[in-house]
Image 1 (cartoon, protein in one colour):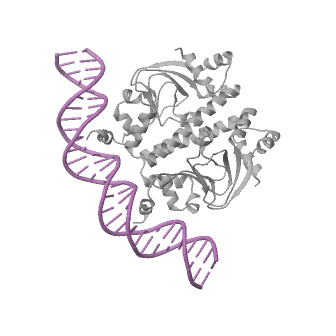
Image 2 (tube, chains in turn yellow, green, orange, cyan):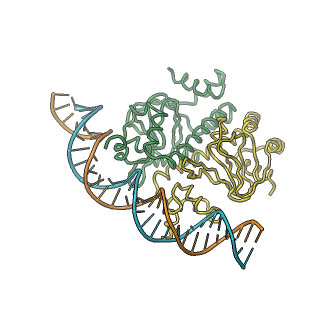
Image 3 (tube, protein in one colour):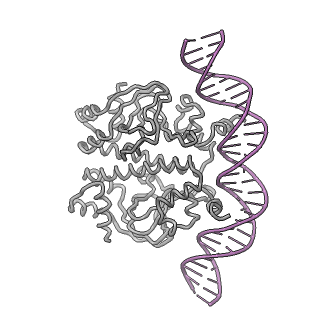
Length: 190
Length: 190
DNA sequence: TTTCAAATGTGATATAGGTCACAAAGCTAC
DNA sequence: GTAGCTTTGTGACCTATATCACATTTGAAA
């Protein structure tokens, strides 16, 4: 499917835009392709875009002082990702985003998003909905973190996103669950 | 300060409303007073409102099968709280909200919020901003959970919200940090 | 002022998960 | 096909935190 069509169907679930409006909105997005392993956002850099995934799989992650990686989010097709904190607050990135597989995305700058939200009430409605969904998901994950053990969280993740099992290596799954790869491996093997 | 004035100043930071618009928006909120210990939302009930805190301190929390409590959020003046998952998705509450101190709040129903967002672009802008802030905060907390030990998280919490130290008992702080009250106590004592 | 419940401190013990070290598979690129 | 990464498995040991039990302190209500 074409990029414009994917974005259209994604937005149409929430906000109804005319074809003209959609064309206008779409004109603010810039398509980009990345290879597996390529970096999209690097901690320390300025962040001016967010990314809508058309194909492939990205990860957003934090690297701590001991160089340990924590994965905030896997981004599959029709998901949005960025360092939202840096993007909204105009600070340097503390989060990295890179490609687990080859990927195609649509980028939109923070200021273009704000412009569109301001010009088109519908678009603001869409973005409010999108962030709501993210907020509720983040709260759920936080609760699961406090309440459930690793095995439960692993199975919960795979039930929710079975496609990750084939695409994402286990060390990255472990970094998402917040445990060592050894512990994850031992859940089913040792 | 008067309820209307508190809400006005809170919204005005983000979206400019005329006095007429503000009066209209305010007319959809219903003031309520609660006593310390009173329950506002109980797991299992239907949820139709969200709450803007005028005074006092609330907590939103989850109780698991072993009756262990996990606190999602403390809500201080000018904070918003509810079971947002249940509210947006029209499902029964899984989260409880109750009063740590006597409290005054403004309630707005989900449908009135959606109506106002639809009628006034500005109001939709405000609520998008609010949820953005919550989303970014939730992601930060998640990261801190994965990356930092209890002591660090405790000090981070008190640095961010020093007023909690005097208002909120340590067993509730522990339930927010996701550790046992004994562990929290031992951080500085045993 | 007394009384009772809530909040806090602390010892002993158990356990989930971390860390380090090394080995074995699996992929990828030439 | 083979050299060299990346990913995965696993043993041995360590540590943070949980859990249970009980004592002490604090604070609010009568």
